[in-house]
Length: 416
Ligand SMILES: [Zn+2]
Image 1: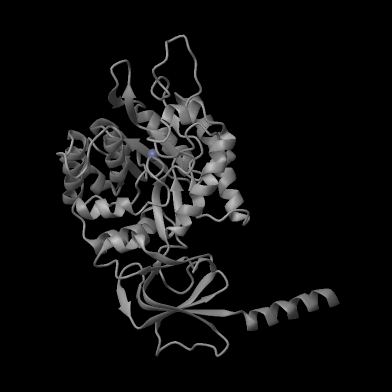
Image 2 (image 1 turned 45 degrees about the vertical axis):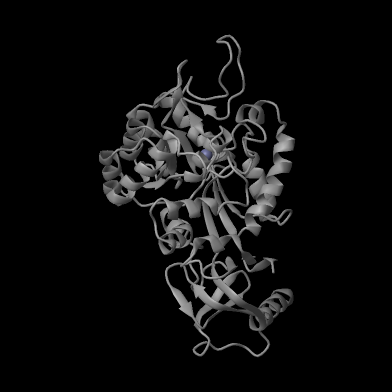
């Protein structure tokens, strides 16, 4: 009893004396609006208050961090990453899956995680370990335990693919190679695999609704409507969303009707399918930067040569999606290109028709809302103190997101 009372008093005195940190930038972008003359108060791992310096009571012993010359904003949310992949011009995808050891891939991932955080991305949705089993769950845990610096992670574990549809490819029919995702088909098997992935740590279930399939490599729908609906039903019953890779009209249509949370890529989307997505509230994560990078790996001299068909098509589909009012998630498929250069996707979103302000909202409050991340994405009292300061004003020029001067995650400072 005496001990309990002592604990209580200790706790109380800690509560009374908890250190407040005051962040003083030139301006604050709270996730929706830009405010001048604002300060942000942080206590422990959360934001205590944000508002005009004249209206807030600041304790005399508060620690002040001077961020003159910067805009303070919510930590950015990467909507589509692969922390266990590195750029394909360094090592092709097949060799990353088949030749690199999982140990090497994890060691690389620790560097990727740090670079991502230092670039101001405090949360990532990592959509598939691509042959590295559940290493993403392990990396996530190591970050949560403070062993390595890195962003908060929402992970997919292994993605789910239909028999015959996924790679590595290019082997004789009699040669069996390990795949970059987990195969499952049919009623019982799909239920079992979704549940097994959840049990092993998947926060989201990623499925491939279509893929380049067969000896001629045409992208075609894979799972049937019933199979997709089943996976969504099983995942949702445990509170997890399903996200679908889909680049064909039919794959996108089936995934949308099945009730997935987001569709990744969407290159082959039509006016009709984008209108269906808008109607059903299914978001598109366009991953513009991945296609841009791959086209350059294949020899496109960006800036001096005309845009290849893939890029022209991407511009067209993005325009259609925006015109249809499809909710947009910001996510670049980083890993195909360099971790830490995540904001390339944001620059391309502006280049493809969105305003700087709309993109900034998308990568903060928008992603938080569409991906159901309740604790992040806004600078308001009670949210986790994930805060980033950039030099300049990103609501007018998205490129200043490359100039990250300060990073705080969960109230801890990682860059100053
Ligand atoms: Zn991806």
